[in-house]
Amino acid sequence: MRVKKFLMTGIILGLGVQSLSGCADRRGTIPDKVHVGVACYNQSDMFISELLTCLREEFDQRGAAVTIRDAAGSQRIQNDQVKELIDSNCNVLCVNVVDRADPSEIIDLARENNVPIIFFNREPVAEDLMQWEGLYYVGADAEQSGTMQGELAADAIKSNSRIDRNKDGKIQYVVLEGEPGHQDAIIRTENAVNALRSSGIELEKLSYGIANWNRAQAQNRMQQMISKYHNQIELVLANNDAMALGAIDAYEKLNYTEAAWPVFFGIDGTDEGLQAIMDSRLAGTVYNDKEGQAEAIAELAFSVVMEDMDDENQAENEKYIYLPYEKVTSENAEDFLNQEKTEESVSE
Ligand code: BGC
Ligand code: CA
Image (cartoon, rainbow, N blue to C red):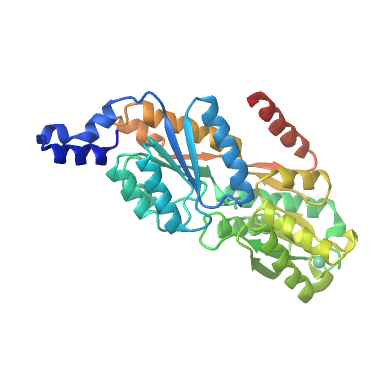
């Protein structure tokens, strides 16, 4: 029973103050079933759609009821969806917030109704997460993914002298960046470049393009960069696989022979990204552990709903959960693809 309705009924019936303490009641009672409301920023995002598939499986296996809503990139729509999910009696919310700098309306709604929120993938700032004890975050460490991408690129450059196509001892590179303001965009770029430099690779940055995690936008940005730099580009660092694949699309569209292609690196290990590694089009990626994140979200959701959330220690320890990234190259891409297939068949 939601606190708000409880309060309203209490007021209408003119009950005494004591029976108005809906909060205590809700917290003390363990519900018969876990009803999860999932709000995602944009289901057309490749990584998010794969993560949602994993999340649904995790909740299905545990017998929870799940409702998923897609904000299609609008915070206003997401605020309404969260309200609707709370009104439909969800006892926990999983929110992939559209605007990570502005989750306040959602937090207020959840807090007023005493419905805990597990934010995921798009990390609210710490100040916001500290606003209330019923707020959590599950994701991954952006710095680690950038560093791993840079290390993968450095290994490739050191073991293949053809990458420095003009033989000037420097690697001419471009960057395809994710959404401005996203915790994974700038940090991935910075750390990838730092890792390359600290492993002794000389770099020359030619240009960058913001492509908002999106394959089609990345193709577009890449075509513009190619028209300016022609075959000078030797390395493409993309903040995610979708954009790395968009960059490859650009070279294909312009009919560049593979000998004139740069090397491309992504992050995520989406199905298409892994496949592109198997096909030797993408040189490497960094696995963003969607299975691990989905499992952590589902476990946390059950523990916040089923257990005594007044246990402050437990809440404090589990406020942030970061799953580790893993490097993927042609040597282990198949293992990741097979692992996904096995998990799919186990859950069938
Ligand atoms: C992923 C991107 C995705 C973004 C969405 C990032 O962690 O690497 O592929 O578009 O999250 O928030
Ligand atoms: Ca060069």
